Length: 211
Image (tube, rainbow, N blue to C red; front, side, top):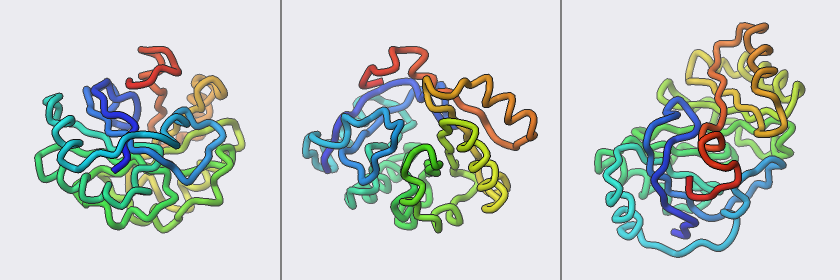
């Protein structure tokens, strides 16, 4: 696999926010979201074997592991990596763009599916059957740039009956949408969702890598 970085940090997003976590960031992504904050993972990286990756992960002694990118599922070898991490007793999070079929992902892993809103410029690349594969252990994340994105996401919650099948996260684009404004919209509409802010960007500088 081509790996951009492996590091130990505080989980900044999802329902696991605040917990120590090892991140395996694989290289490459077929999408180009307007608000992407990990463009450095599009290219480069280092070829590493499954055993080399596992050795680095295990050295941290941390139960929670996230396989991310880029788009991790763009590399076929990510599937056995996820399964092996599960077999070794890790709680495994898989953060994916939603553009690639999640059916091959080990059922023991927790999928965090990024549902691309119009503001991302990539809504047309979504693999919509993925939403029907989410279960209560998984999460659907909507990154919102503005009110248009919010209303679109609100409609998707109903259309796909997401709150009854998985945790739903609404996340403001950092520096673009005021979290307080998003909170007020959620409360006004009484949405059964979780508002999340990227904690790691508050702890460290927003553009800092390896956190």
